[in-house]
Length: 216
Ligand code: SAH
Image (cartoon, rainbow, N blue to C red; front, side):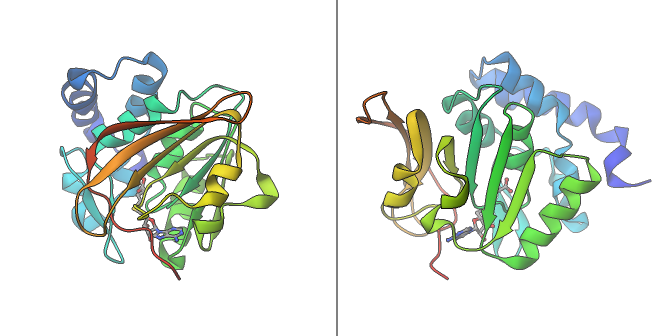
């Protein structure tokens, strides 16, 4: 049986959404539905697959991790995804966060520094028939000017400061979510909202721990 059609994970995924996501206060029905639909285990290497629905991050190779399910849900809810939105993700990793967002928006453009990860994410997303995700290998510090501006920018690795190009590539009315802080320590999850006039409002959401956003 391939990992993709293995229904033995259904109960674990339901429990994950009920206990870790809805149970901790995520209310957006579209977000909960996306978490129910995306087979998280398909994004996790076979050796770690038994931990796919655990309440924590899981190693995905190259020293990187797929984020804790609750953090994926929280970041997704905070950026208020709308069906017509175009999204930039920095840090494709396994491709799971991109898949969750792709169920909620028009298109996700996602950049990954590690070629091995970009390739495996592309393969899984193709197998699962996601047609509104574009993966690119490269450095996300500069964003993706060819497809800018974006309604949403989501950064899933931690920079010490928010890269200015990512702010510049956000539309008026856009939302940017990013963990900001020192490497391998606690960072602050920050939500930036750009209003119609281009003014920025920043909200500190909660302390988190992400792998660092690296310079190539
Ligand atoms: N969103 C991912 C988890 C990301 S882990 C998921 O759903 O699985 C963070 C990822 O950011 C890692 O894969 C790491 O290789 C990548 N990364 C680190 N620095 C980067 C950079 N400068 N540009 C693009 N990706 C980067």
